[in-house]
Length: 273
Image 1 (cartoon, rainbow, N blue to C red):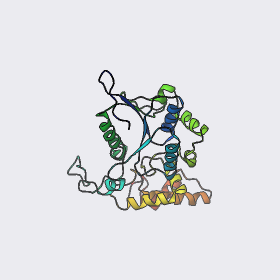
Image 2: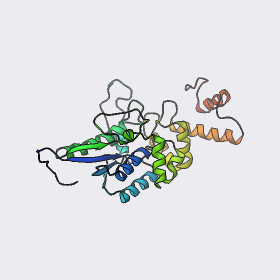
Image 3: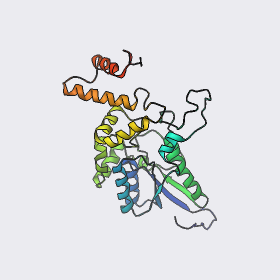
Image 4: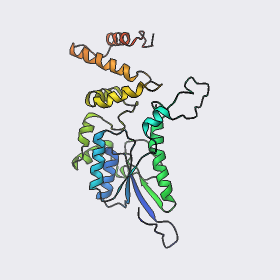
């Protein structure tokens, strides 16, 4: 970072920072900020340790080609520590899970991985800089995404760029993430339980070594990967689907689910027997 610059009126100088997840939206934002000459002092990439290998290659390329530094941030403790060992204060001390170690899998109402491995890390870093600078932070949320935070600037919204616009913009400039966006509509942490079934099928098919890590992690924790299926049950389901496809049978409908639930040891309503 540049040395502290004090304005003539005694106020703090501004530093302009862009948040980079590495995905299509934040990448398009950073590229266009540079192309259009917006003030930009540095880019922040917060590494959860859970990105696809091709995403790390993409970020490495940006690091080489951007005219401003890419500051890599990372939590002091890694995902496995929080997932398997960290002991939070449980809201319900009488819960059967109160004494279970680790945060286990995230859920729609408990995205602890985002807060602990990203948000808290970025906020801590910027908090240190705010002692010397006024920070202007660019956030890469597309014009067709709903979330907004008043304190930040959203260049993609100002430009009216949708998610599709962002992807096309990056492709036109030769950034393709090694084909990740041809496999997935959205690219985030590969182990996210909030992915849809189609994304999980793709993960298992295209990245078997990562799928094996999911199976290994679940064997060491206390919460199912998803509300409806554990990773082991998904493995059974996907194998069953492949078997039926080879036989020319459908992978939906009453017959499919009746046999699937039988293999999973569930009753006709999908509940465990």
